[in-house]
Image (cartoon, rainbow over the protein chains, first blue to last red):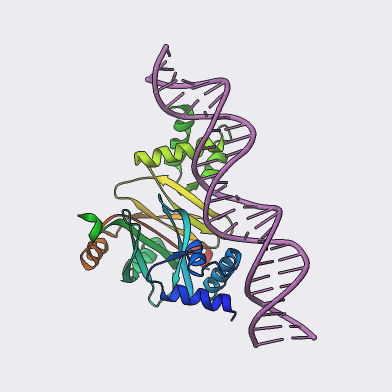
Length: 124
Length: 124
DNA sequence: TTTGCTGCAAATTATTTGCATAGTA
DNA sequence: TACTATGCAAATAATTTGCAGCAAA
């Protein structure tokens, strides 16, 4: 475990919302190369410590966002106005997943789910 | 409505699975420029005729996949072995969405959901 | 010492855009 | 005719990779 990876996983663990590679690079005060950030993210994702989803937002463009994996894992809501992510607590898709497996004869291993809309502050 | 857009929406409408811009370009036998395909896709997505999600697959890399919007809309399962998309019928997230709106005080406008795993042929 | 990580720079790839031309209403 | 889409080529931007040097075990 190198300094760069320690810093990386610490930042992800303490973040309350998913972060892009660029976000993390900035939070590290650019002490490590962007390529190092990407390699670290891929490493942790392969380990299963981190998971990610690709998200498009008019302001930020399309980027991959990374967050610490929990069990059961978490999904996020993205506010289209203030562009913040809000954690929606633990995943509630188990029942649906089992129904879909039965109905369509597939074995589901993973899913990606996120929501967009307006948060309470931006709705008013 | 131009020829290029007619061809584009016809291909998407007849496809049983989401297609990438590259897929569509090939299905058009490259009669139209890739830039034209992208512009057409953005046009139809803004119209609400088409929707899309960004999907990463080891074989294909990260690409945006487009499909015809239905009401209620559809989600897809992607087989990690044969790399085919399977439609999972109409969306069953309404109840969960309302629960989440109540629990987290947000107004959900959209969601993105897809599953990965093994299809029945590849599971054996 | 040996293996694997990092920095740097360059490559890759999906997607977008500027501009002149062609097509549509 | 007037407006908008298309083709082509170049630009963007996120992410990956080769290679040489450095750090960790």
